[in-house]
Length: 103
Length: 107
Picture: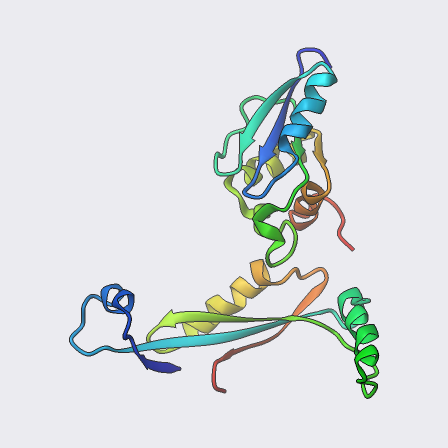
């Protein structure tokens, strides 16, 4: 994990982004904060979508966060083989993005 | 279509300080329901609660969403087409939900 750059995305209402960053640092990697409105991945090696209540869980959990500018880059990266971990609400964003099966 | 008097200062400013305070707003209603073949846990929880309140007439409940989309002026076919597209892309999740109605309000 050393020298790995792990991006953690913050959406409006994300609660556990700093906790995820702490976990990344404890694992020995570099935590890179990624902002939902910034369509830029800052050369990370992997991405975490953290837990929380993005957009208040309005409409459907993760449904609005799915269309954040950064998510187009995340989806492209994932389709190109970059590891993406979705935790809790982050997983819901992945389901709404069709990166994870949602049934 | 709703025609009302914009009495608040905000309404007058928003519509450019028009001499008459009558403002016309078109509205489109979009309804989204869980797909009929899926379990609706929310509706099932509500259905379980109703008899506890004395409502034992209902054999089932399914819960959906109703959206009101406002447009300036009259509702046009373009507005309705955009509403259908928005319903497919954002207002519903087509994997688990159906858009069951897209109509001009009042119809």
